[in-house]
Image (tube, rainbow, N blue to C red; front, top):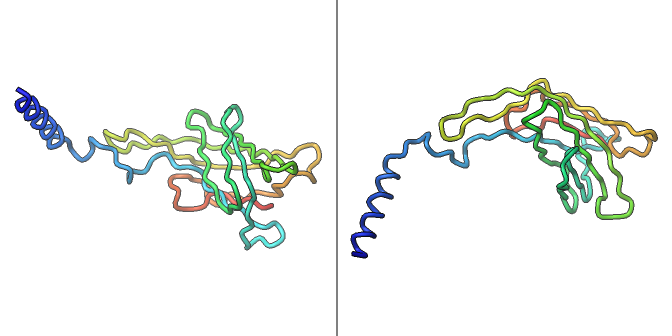
Amino acid sequence: MKIRSIALVLVIAFACLWACERDDICGEEQQVTPRLVIEFYDINEPEELKPVVDLAFHADGDTDTLLVQGATTEIELPLRTSANQTNYFLTEFATSEGFNTDQLRLDYARRNVYMNRACGYKVEFIDFQARRIIEEAPNTNWIRSVSVQETVIEDEEVVHLFIFH
C-alpha cells in the first residue's frame, strides 16, 4: 500500500512538472519592479565618489528603518508603486551621536508593464524628479545637492540619481 501511494505521488508530481510551461514559473532572472539606484559624490570634487558612513534610511510613513553599516557609495531604494511620490529620510552617521538626517522628495509617474502570466505586471517609473527638502538651517544639511541622471527607471543596471555631499 505504501509503495502505491509513493508511486502515485511521484506520478502526479512528474505530470505537474512536465505540464508546466515556461511562463507558468516566474524565475529569479525575470525583471521585477526596479529600485532607484543612487550614488554618492563629493560636492567639492563632483567626479569623485564619496562614501557615506553608517547610512540609515526610511520612507515617510514607514516604521522600518534600514541601516547600511560602514561606508557605502551606492544604495538602492524601493519607490512606492501605489503613489506618485516617495519621501525618504536619509541619516548619515546613524550609529553615532553626530547623526544628521535629510529628506528627499521623489516624484514620478507610474507605468504598468505586463511581464507574463506567471510574473504578472511590474511598475516602471517615468518623469522621475528628485529634490532635497531644505530645513530651516540649510547649512546643517549633509546633502548639498542632487542630480537626476535618468528620468525613466526601468531597470537597476544604471544609476538614476547622484547625491552630492
